[in-house]
Length: 373
Image (tube, rainbow, N blue to C red; front, top):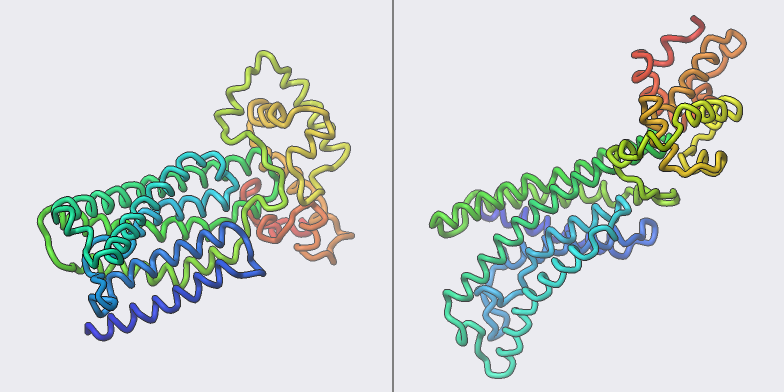
């Protein structure tokens, strides 16, 4: 059984290293986010090697003790969080936090550098200058800090994805932008890894020794992450690539605009007239900036008007117009030869899935239900 486990682990390590190199050096999917993803995988590979390597020395250098090999666990939360933030286009918002954790991570790695320099100079180890208790305590503090930072990183990642969905509702009309299941999978795949890691740390805190089944289960989830989740994430581009990004991030900000100082009733009437007269909704890539420029009105004010006066968000407001346009075509006998996809495209929908989602939300039925009624 042990040989089977070792074989699976080493096969995963080799595959993980190959995938990490692909993510970092790929030209087709080149991006800072994918470099971060590759480094994230390399940390898993290096951590696994430090646990599963079948020998204790490299020449005369002992590698079995704490900090004789670089401790990379602190890189787990910061690389994970940095990747998610990069995909969402909000890295700058957390730049100070990221710099702090990166700095701590390199400080911990630096302990190994110091240890190795001591070995080169006099053949000794840092443990001969400090007590075993100090080294052990520093090591465990590093483990717990990395674990709790990972939990915090997961929470921040979830919050920012939810903020992203709010932003899409308020600023963009493309329903396909909600198709981010791959990013949710990436985030939630880290949760069972962290859960097993937490159980192992709890076991150690309660006096447990040796390697438990929690460790094997943790690496089972890591292997799943390496083989499936990471590759799916690698293939997706940053969510706002080529799109304008507004400073407006939440529905709370929209509602906070003083309605007393804004004639939303008049603006609502103007918005409706503009949309119907110019059929802006037929533009598949319509966003609130297009209307902002056309009406010479700040995008924040338009968002506030649509949310407060019309009772819907920008995304739903625009797609309601598209549904109405599609309904007219579906019921038009002269358009009976049009395909559902063709009608959706002529109505401003970017894809079949977007059209079906909008119809289901507004009417409770698929587009085909209304064909030639």
